[in-house]
Length: 464
Ligand SMILES: Nc1ncnc2c1ncn2[C@@H]1O[C@H](COP(=O)(O)OP(=O)(O)OP(=O)(O)O)[C@@H](O)[C@H]1O
Image (cartoon, rainbow, N blue to C red; front, side):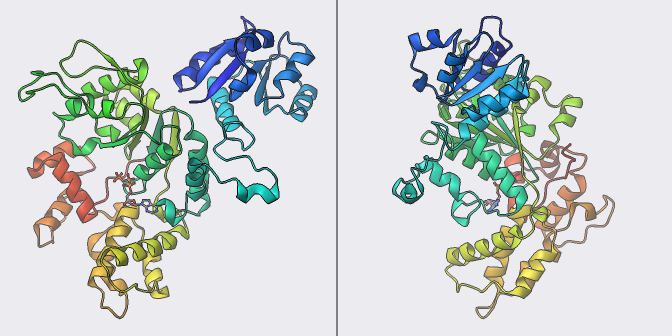
């Protein structure tokens, strides 16, 4: 956890930052003067100092500027900005300032290479760089985007995303990851966890769409003995399992309203109450959530709590669809080809131009997961001599969302899987996952598994 010292007079506009930053997972101390701060703490004990310069003399300000320091001023001027920045201030911000602006600059300041807590070790001079190995987190950070990291991406939009991940990961802020199905939302959650100070604790991933609706609350929050029929003994939930670590809730839009209320309590009070319990237990989690649904629309329709929505939206990361990542498509396809050949112990097929042309002419509505499945088909079905693009079987198994069949169009498939796929694609615009599963007579978990297996893309909702 990052330690921050706020130095400001009693009536300073900067005082609000204490509550806001604490809520976002920073450890905050407040002093009214440099002398008071030095009396109880050493300034070097802090990763960052936020300094309101009102009523401070030049000597005090210069003392603070020897450390990582952001200056706040309610009588800001360009001359002062130039002066403080040249003396080592990281940022110069005029007061009053918004909470988001303060948070943004704090995160940026902590991520700077010369910050005492930066994830990158400060270089000790050009020739020494290699003698000072990067910390494990910094190693991890450098790898983002390479095949080694598992999340491949060199395109500008993915590089922007990685840069945001690097800034956000060391904080404890709640992050909402948005993107179409199969774009890599779970990988982003993993990256955030691995680059955070919680990386040695658990990362618990829960897919809310895969747990039956009547069990979600007890799975997440645990239950007392006898809380409901079948609760033979008390049990901890997955939230407690993520204590001190990160909880990733995928498909948060599928969380029923009662469970949303319990989750809100965890975020607001840092407390969890098992189903059927009277007492609450303290819990410390970093929450990352993901959805392909338009939560704002769900709030309007009364399906998602507005207060929870605003809690989840502290930070947002958006994963672009695969079709908008330019050359990344070929890079990912090549890496997948390599790993799939290894997995099936087949001949390492060459990634030919003809194969690439077919890959690049498809729109990949199911994103990287669809690409994975297609390459797997190609590797399994191709002759040992060459990789045949026909075996990607793109025409048969996928369709862009815009080209989905109208409801009344005759069903032309031959197998149960064809029927299931046709049914889901035809009804998902107007039915929820639970309603589709009920109509098909299968569980939500089973529907989820079939979607993955058959590469059925989720309905596309406008994200904004
Ligand atoms: N950039 C990438 N590079 C390599 N593999 C990727 C990349 N993005 C996703 N994948 C792979 O694609 C598959 C789907 O990724 P993931 O489960 O993270 O997607 P998702 O957005 O969470 O999907 P859903 O919304 O359906 O839960 C995984 O096997 C993942 O490893």
